[in-house]
Image (cartoon, rainbow, N blue to C red; front, side):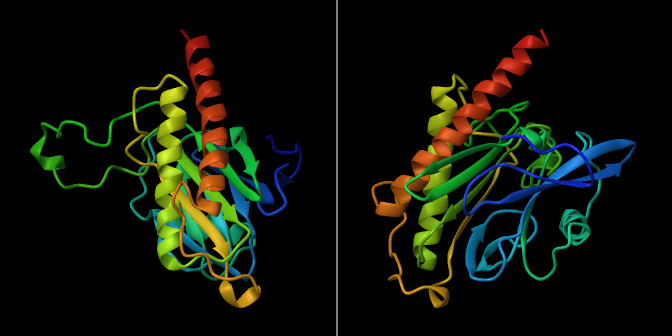
Length: 245
């Protein structure tokens, strides 16, 4: 999945639901890119991003590349600025990564679409040993860590809030499966983010789905789509790192 060349923004080839646009900006002398999903009204999302995290109606998602030594202390405001420059307003979701978002990978399964940007410069286990530096105990990992896996999922059905949370868990489990199958002994990085979007119940006539686990109808499709996107991204990330040595 690659962005079109030319101009400040290019259409990124992807799915029926996740029509992403690549937007470019200059920061610190570097040309950086951001993937923007202009979802519009009618979507309810659960997200762990620094902008728009939690559960609620959201109209866009931004996955923005930043420099590896990113030092801004207001990432939510920064993401809002990036979104505004891309023409977005209102409530949305924002994620940051030092990975090249133009190397995002897309997968679809049974109508569920997933896109993942994969950077594994600093893989870790979720239950790693505590930091020796006591000053860091209890502190959140910096959003600028150069190695982040950001995942966006679109489900073409309404999910209950509980099912949305369950689907985000399912997506995370599928991410871990993909990493292990790609040869990475880790659960991810310290700054991974996920967003699962489902149709708002008041915009369609379909019944609200109560479950989002890996054996549920939409959870299973979410898992397979996320696994495919993350696995491809992880394999390619490993190949790029091996080529540098």
